[in-house]
Image 1 (cartoon, rainbow, N blue to C red):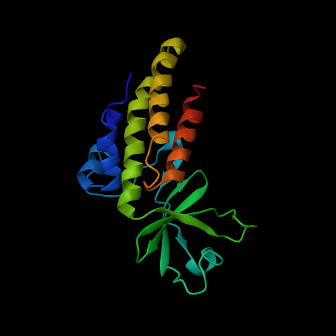
Image 2 (image 1 turned 45 degrees about the vertical axis):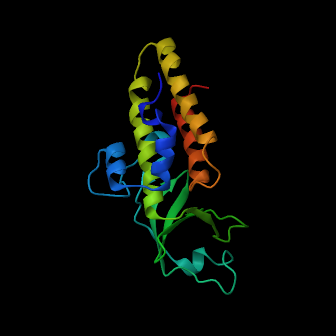
Length: 187
């Protein structure tokens, strides 16, 4: 059973490149936001933790001496134990591992998304995929469940593998595919 949200992959990629509030709302069913406040348990995504980071602490060793450290960082979501931090005033999203990369120096990764809108479109698409997968996961007959759930997950995985290299969120999408496969335990 193919995933409806992925029926036109080119259109989905276009939405990920140029997100719109209408598309995010259509994916999540949540009105009035470009960044959905939605937890996606199946993929291990916890929305808007509300944690405010201390940029000087987080970004020490990440930027060169001449680079400007963000004025503030707000956590907009936690994914796989890593914090998605929105850097202000730029609005870019970085990934921060509180357990630390580089010998626990608290260094942030490269920017994951160029804006909150791009991150919101990614979370919205992931939410839409989960909305389609959950009813399949509820099928009681194990063989029937596997017969429909596995191809749907493989379709999502193939979509992730085919994403253009220049698209925001490669780290996010890899974790999303792994998280869903682990959650639904189909392979």
